[in-house]
Image (cartoon, rainbow over all chains, first blue to last red; front, top):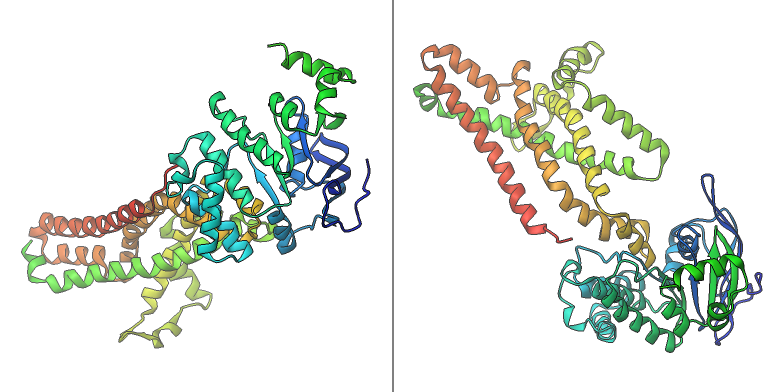
Length: 258
Length: 229
């Protein structure tokens, strides 16, 4: 899988949307990403799994350039990622991101968290942005909390608000960087439900997670990473029942035992 | 305390001057210190280093030494700041003494303001800036809308300490020909040796009142902008 998508693609499910090609990244001595080639098609849900330190979060963060890359190219909808400045900010607006630690703006209410981007980045009017934000908050099931501050919500609620905040920008693709890793088991389900719902509605999603259940039910493709490289890619069905690489067999053996 | 009551005009004038020194150098320190802090946390390496050198130089030298440098060494080098004496603000002529004292206090205090501001910015979790960038805010927008409002809340307690120290540090100017509260106290006790205790008390209370006003305002501001995390 190499960069086949330099031509502008603007519509149609199944066309390449995010294309990583020959991506290399070092953290000092550590070779964090080794020659990564990955194409994510429009409407596709790709789950990235792998042991800690395998580079899956780093991979996720390079796609909206929260991490810079040393070599290779990343294109979104046929356009290469800009280096810095306004063009990069504009690109990030097209890419929704959900973090492990939610990162809701602590000094703003739930509603303000969701409307900040549309108002300041998109230039949407306040009343329209609020109307849309309330719809999104209702959709993720926290509509009645709109006037509260993030610290007053549970982790699961905060993460759902974070999803609504990202959706408010009407992104082309959503990145999830271990969205449920900081949550209690009972809150994990409410977040995953929202994500499954999103996947069913055709959102393009790249999900770094340890939730194998989510990978089985919602993913179109599983990407298995180890030591900074993509070791195996397959359909969830095939990957979980019949992993090809020893590294993946070893990993699945460890996590599926309990 | 009779000496103070019968010369209450002089007493109030003295504290007026103390407050004048505090307000002028306080505002100048906040401006300069914030600028230094932005240089210090910003991405430009040369500005970063320049601000670090400034902080090292002025935070690590005694205030008295900075005063001596500005009042005694600078005039020898040809900088006596006499030019400010032509300036008139609200009917008052600015004295070169007052200007020099404010300069010394500002140079010294801004280094502390810079560090207080920097600690405030550092107190905001990195994820807040990342979340701001992730929804497409520019560097300036994420600073203005996300980082600085939260940093401001974290910065109030350390900044209050810096400002309280400044209010009391104005007393160093007493040794350099400025009739602020401490200098006036000394002249009162010289003239009325039998009332020393009362005079000391009267001036101590004056300082307590000034500092209490600062800490009370800080408390009110802090309560207004408090955020839960």
